Image (cartoon, rainbow over all chains, first blue to last red; front, side):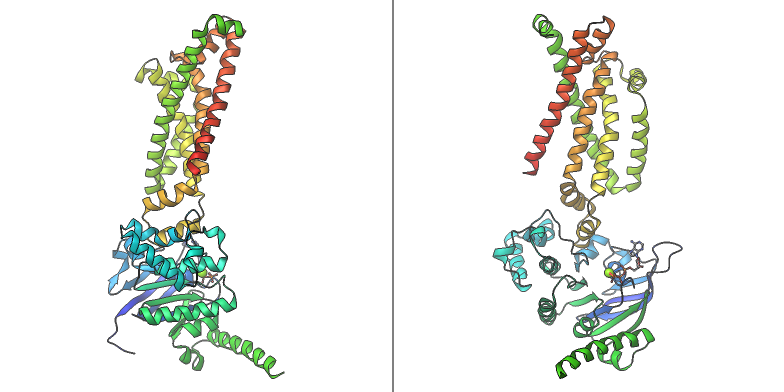
Length: 261
Length: 204
Ligand SMILES: Nc1ncnc2c1ncn2[C@@H]1O[C@H](COP(=O)(O)OP(=O)(O)OP(=O)(O)O)[C@@H](O)[C@H]1O
Ligand SMILES: [Mg+2]
């Protein structure tokens, strides 16, 4: 690893227990993410991926441990300030239903009194970037979009403030396979161009391996393995990881079998 | 009945105007107060629970008793009536306001927070516009209730349509009682209609 790079996000024994008697949803997770890395978080439903992501922008506060962003313990920073420094794509889309696509994308910069024309033209640029024609879609309401289109607007909105860190919670959940591939490639391009740090949650192993420079594999709140896709496949650190990889192989051999016919 | 209106128009018109005035003043004050309390409750959620509990106790006190309790503080007359009516309205308004604002989709509220809105921005730019229906429903409920309970204010010399009712009861004058009841019903229905119309204007 290149030690000249800054640590963008550091998790130090981070835990989250929603109530006294409940099992911890996130259990003593420790990890360091370098600036500019594209990290994917992979794990089955309910394993704590969203919880970990929400603690990163203080939508939730850890019940144990610390999260450090660029050297600063975030529990000492006002939550609103933390959130404004990060782009966040929410799992259940979360567009504001009473505002148009353009208003959704521009509301926060406008509240922060940025120049209207600049904000507007950047919003249109971002819409094109996520493959939505601004002339067609800028004035629509979220209810007039498909699920996948809404998720793309959510992505554009998160990119709007040009944040150093992007948190994406299953941003392609509602998108068909073909559009999904093209958006994945789009995201990789955005990452290459902007050098932002990306943290993307998914439960699709192919997506995690394709996008992640390193992959965090979680199960029942624990971080089982955090490594490059190559190392994970070669040296699975845990029976759960092994099973995960085997499932991906089985799928692939199905496709190969069909091709042979 | 028409004879009574024609021979003593002032005996009907003046209580009616009085009642409208009392309702309007009560409405303005209580909506302002409830809005203020709602904003405070948004910042300090515990306060919302305390206020709701307090005003539900107030609301359960019979109106005549509450009027009587208030007399030592503000004397007989309209001030006392408006004070009591505003206190009752807080239960209806605050209850509806808080319930409406809390019913806004948690996912949407989380998104508002997630993109970096402050508590106040989330309240005024997201919750209020999305809860507009519930907010207006609360106001309409409060107006109709004010018009009804307001008739009892005549017992403490606050005037209004209650004057017709109480006079009618004392002198067994059915025509007066009918006029009093009819007018307060008409008033309630038209106030409700006007507010619905205003709501459309705001939403449009
Ligand atoms: N607000 C909450 N209160 C109580 N428990 C919660 C809360 N949010 C999440 N949990 C619990 O914490 C655990 C982890 O939830 P989380 O949402 O992080 O899972 P996830 O990995 O994102 O799953 P999915 O892939 O289904 O989105 C779950 O068992 C969930 O029930
Ligand atoms: Mg999740």
